[in-house]
Image (cartoon, rainbow, N blue to C red; front, side, top):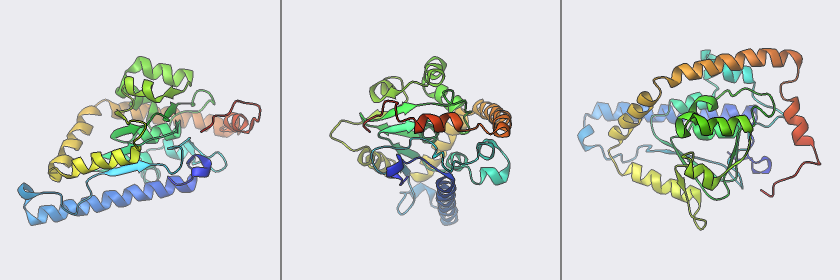
Length: 266
């Protein structure tokens, strides 16, 4: 994500570009799989020249502080499971990625940015990393899986504490609670550590890496699919009502525009 002046908040254009980026990655990996199968030498598969992993990060001081409310993606579209909407849904496209996605986090990981992080397989953060789910604060429904994925990472009690209070979760707490998979030392950059992890992955048999990743995904999402379906139904019902009265993002816009509220130094 490359909008550091906006803390990498995503607008409609960014969502479309991110979806396209992962569609392209998925296509390239699938082409590599077909080439590997046609050579028939999986036993000797050393991964040379293949895409082994994806590193997802943000330019500047933050990973992603959520949606840019000057031009946000449609929550109705992002809650939909119609094929043409899923085509432009970045989290859905990330879920189809055949190789591991490593999140290199720092600074704000807020609401929609929180959901983008949870769409990754491995989360690496530093001491500046701050998670926050503000959906309930502004009367918004999650569209990208936060209500289901967070509790699977850290248990329902802590997930409820985070999401229903809309309070910040700092890096050490996030690591202690299992939200961050690794908390890098202060003298190390998360992107560099993510590259090291990607290199370790790439040193292995890539056919088995992809099959193992698929087994973990499929085994862990047996009931998740039903939960995500329920979240989409909630989102559609909520936004049909909210869009109808024109108040969808008004609370969040007022909060952001309030010059009297305390400001972070990030």
